[in-house]
Length: 201
Length: 181
Image (tube, rainbow over all chains, first blue to last red; front, side, top):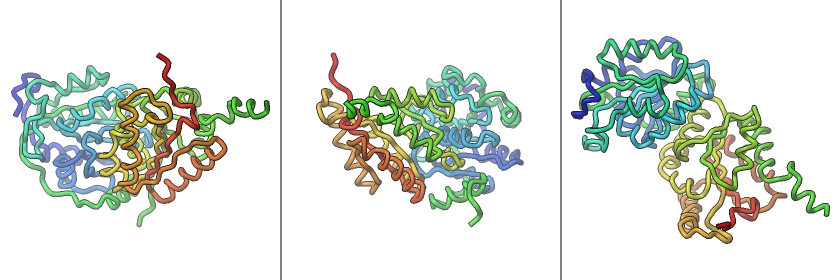
């Protein structure tokens, strides 16, 4: 667990926060889960056809979500990414800040470890402040959620924000709940059906 | 004289053919990582309001974006150079290929036919083995008279078969980049 004073917020739980997010979705919003625990918890929070689950390509949850947001500007798109994954693709923050999609909400689940590979600390665990990096990358509407209520408030605020929103949450090191079914074509087809691009099978 | 005019006519340039063929196939989103040879294409894409085109920080980021866009119902293509392709093995094998996404890539070919940078020449030799090992469709475009056919048919095949394709733009087509320092 990080001792970085920049992350001076309550330590929460990923499955609990993901469930709180999913409970707020009423308009077939798209949700992109990163690799590993973020998408295990997304699945366990109640599978929706508008969920996309990654099986690899670490660090690309935000770029994939950006693509969905650009293709469907009238649909709200959420992306759930781990801190280690984000560190692998920090440049994506600048790209998103430049394009300013107002329908995109980015959530960074930060526990300072590569949990799924054996819980090794990330290189940034003790020193890097993800939200400060996001602000410095041009995502000015970025903040740490102080606690669960604050997280819910930030999620709701993002739904009517004038630009992209990034929310950092400190989470514990509990493993993900449930396991995503791992058929990539089924995942993609179901997602495309869920967001109105495909006819039902 | 007629041949020279045809060669320099802007409608017949390789980059005009790419732009027109993208448009004809309703490809509207074109993220890229810059390359000297691709400059006229990138400039013309920016100038045409039909396209949403922008620089990304890494090629795999661009592949993530166009994969999301495809799933959201928008067709797109990625522009890069050879060294950028070399960074893509993971995202091709874990996203584009298994999820069956019609990823369309234009790769400006460095590392061959007079390359002056040793690093580029070695990277170039890794490209086709990677494409072949993933059983990915790829074509090397060398002739302007075949180019539109290759681009148009490759886009249509990628979409119809939901499979990635790499279109390698040889210096024989583009003139490449020459040593000028």
